[in-house]
Structure formats: structure tokens, C-alpha cells
Image 1 (spheres, one colour):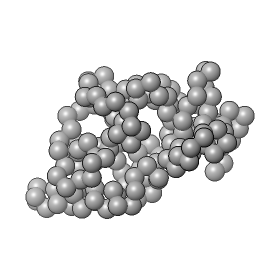
Image 2 (cartoon, helix red, strand yellow; image 1 turned 45 degrees about the vertical axis):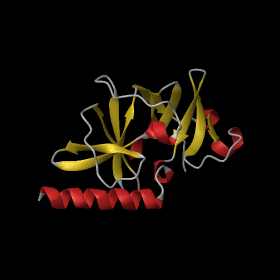
Image 3 (cartoon, helix red, strand yellow; image 1 turned 120 degrees about the vertical axis):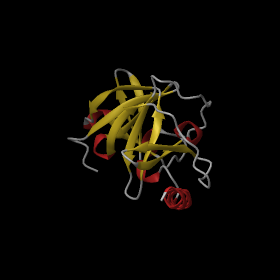
Image 4 (cartoon, rainbow, N blue to C red; image 1 turned 90 degrees about the vertical axis):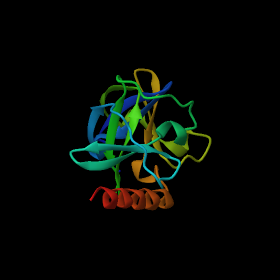
Length: 159
């Protein structure tokens, strides 16, 4: 990964400050009502309708083992493109767009005591540690397959 000219979107979920590479983000929207997605794995909160397409919303809080909370209108949905699936997740607050500077980016294995595959690295921004997440590793292959199957069933029912 060339980090010299990469930007991240930083955001908060609970008390954690997190970040994702800007080139993986499709868009950020205000929170909307999330509908149930039958047959989806437990990590999926539901689906939303984006321009006539069903978009799965995953539960980032559940993946990080954080206390659950209901979405509120001031929350944001960050829509990301992994290498195999487009999905969204709720964020409590968008905190900014930051340029990754080599001197402030550390690989996760150099900082974190546990092997956390979904964390690509850590940055220090404004004296706060920001965990940079690897979206391609956020969902397991099995979870992605179940989401795809559930979305396909929903499309058939709505046809």
C-alpha cells in the first residue's frame, strides 16, 4: 500500500475514532430507516433503498463488540465498496478527511497486541489514535455469500 498520497475518512462509532481509505468510500448519507433483510447473517442490520437498489447495512458496532444503540437522524451511513460487495454501516459522527502521512501511520501488528485482521493500521490524528480498517476483511466469505443470497431473494420477491 502506498500511503504517501492516501486520504482517509475519519469517523466515530461510540468512543472509538476510526478511519477508512477514501478510495473505498462511495458516499456518505444521513441515516434513514433500515428494513429487515431475511436470511442475512447476524452481522447485517438490514437494508436500505438507494436509487431503487437494496443496499445491505452491516453492524460495525457488533463486529467491534461495542454497546448497541438505535440509529438517530444525526447518524451517518458510510457506503463502501469492498472488492466483492458494496455495503453501508452507521457512524455516529464524521470527524474529517485526513491525509495519511508516513510518519503518523503504523501497521497494526506494530501497535496492537492482538491479531486484528480488520485493522490495517493506526494513525495519530490530533493526539488521538485512529484505527484504519480494512474493508476487504470486514466481512467473512461466508457472510458475504449469505448477504448476496439474501439480496437475490429480496430482488426476486420484489420483481
